[in-house]
Length: 455
Image: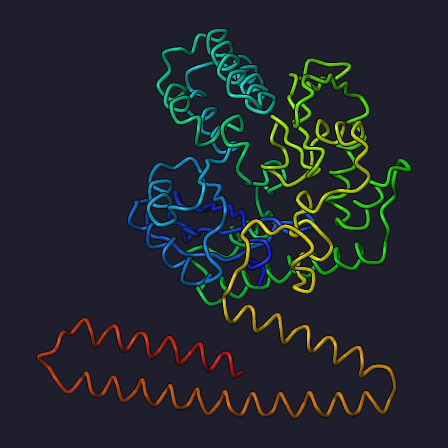
């Protein structure tokens, strides 16, 4: 369900791959509507081969029938990227900026003195973060490389050649929640470092991992409560800011509010008087590059060359500056992503906001949401009085008993069917031995999963 709501952008990270004392593990994670890390799943891996990562992505898609993510943020690993491109052709794959800078520091650390390397990394980070346009990034990159005499460095040359796979200037039009996606799941990593060693039984390690994941959802529930019952403080009398405070979660509203407040320090010059109103937006103080904003007065749509909304789902200060000038008093639906709102996990508001992955038709998820809404309605109506409470309680228990009974019957039938299939396959010794093994494993796995579901 977490992946259903927040699986539009996923980060894949690995831990303990280079240690013989620990179990190598891969973590699929993302970010929820409170900007908290959310764990979608973990996997044990054997090696760094493209085949292993391809298997990992295939199993990932099987486990998450909602569909592939919009974007996938990867470690700087060519085998991982090749497998992702092959198995997830419709997903935009990018390399993690932090991992790239870490690789640069590690590779150059033994060749150059620490103070000079620190200055180089600082300038390189500034080049990456501040240059939102392709031309300015290429110019800045060349200037930094020349300044420190790294023109012949093979690593830096290779990074420049694949710059379209990691530099924000080239990936800015793809939603990847850049700067919003948590860099790591610290609590989870602490559990892994403590329990996923060769000295710990696997079932104990997995149990501890499950408890750590539960803690993430407890924090999400707490944030849901605060967002529902504590109103955010607005800084101005603007209806735009007031509307945003009522729609977005507190964490997202704070990001929006920062952009809105900063917009008052920008100046917009009108460039054209065509059907599209174009502006050149510059900051009053500082050296930030100028951006071009296009506004359609009929549709109330806006587009900025910085592409902050496209990459993060939050309107930038340049676009908000133009909204104020053009007299826009309410955020159009096109600029309210459902995944950032207070109703991110509700299907009742599915038509009110924008969903990046569109309509998803996973039957189990749809049915779950439908039943969840009915159960909530029953709880609201049944809590009005003691008499209604008794009726609702009895009805829910009766329905649950019928569902569980039918589920047990079906589970038993499936188990018997698997056993008959195994016996039938075992009769013919000349049959393919691998088929028997496959059937046995499948039957055992299904049986365990079904029994666990019943429990």
